[in-house]
Every structure is written in C-alpha cells, then in structure tokens.
Image (tube, rainbow, N blue to C red; front, side):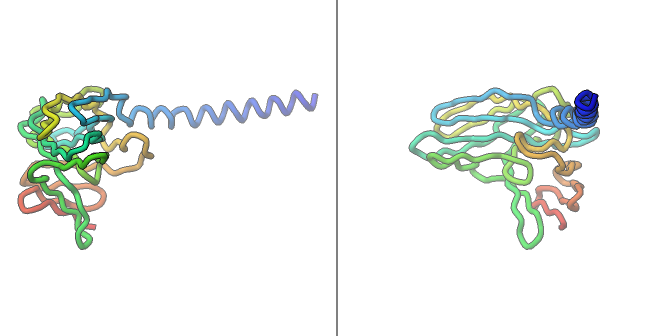
Length: 203
C-alpha cells in the first residue's frame, strides 16, 4: 500500500509539472522563428535568416541572420531589396556614452575571411524602411542580398513573433515600436530618433 501511495504521489507531481510547463514551452516555441533554410553563394554561407513581426501601424521592421565567409578574401554585403518595404539597409547599433546609436553601414557590412557575423537585435540588422505590408508571424519576407565578390542571393526570412528573441536565446527581450525614418521609435529602454543624423535611445 505504501509503495502504491508513493507512486500515486509521484505521478500526481509529474502531471502537475506537465500541466504548468507545457504552456510555457508552447509559448517559447511560438515566439521563436521557425526553422529557416541555409543559403550558399560563392564562399558565403548564410544561416538562420529571420525577422520580427511588426505591430499594427509600424513603418519599419528588422531582419536578422548569420553570415559566414569561408573564403580567403574579405567580402561586403548590402541589402538590395525586399518584398515588404520600399527600401532595405544594413544598420549598426552601438552604445556611445550611454546612448544607443543606430546608423546605416556605409559601403556594406564587411565579412573577413574565416569570420562569422551574426545580425541580431541590438546589433547589426537589416532595416526594412517604409513597410508596404506588415510583417506577420508565420509568414516570410524575401530579401535580396548583394555581395561584392560572392554575388547576389535571395533569402527567405521566417517571421517570428513581435519582440521574439534570437534563435537559441531566452525570451524576455523588449518590443521596439518603430514609427518611421524621421519619427521616434519607442521601447522599454527609452526613445530613439530616426536614422537622420544617427538614431539615439535614452538609457
């Protein structure tokens, strides 16, 4: 009887644990981008292309991916076009004197031989300016990238939830509300002005 009781208790604990953790796991899964295809062009390998869904009325969006240069010479990449916005550009984000600044990467993002560069929230990213349609979770955005040496490649970015974390990282990142190139972008960390003259965000 005692053994039966312990088994019942253990089974009950396991059932309760499953009941409370299953929704959390489902939430994490739904927030993360779906598995995306990898792409190769010349000596360049592109993996984990994804984007965040945009809130209603947003003018701009952002896309991310990992780019590896497996060749012996440096290369530079620019975003030529996409099927969701009027213009796409690669931007950098850096912290300068307690202010987060976002600027276009002039001349393209350099990928040195043997180097892997990851475009992530809060770092390098592809900016989709003047959206023609919202970025909707579960859909994709097609991006055309041009490398100086490797050539041109079309990449499909899987769209994850608003504020989704990068693949393989924990959830909890804030949502950034984008209002347009000359307007303000608000988020939990403060406010950003538009790209003109450098985007700024307060502490």
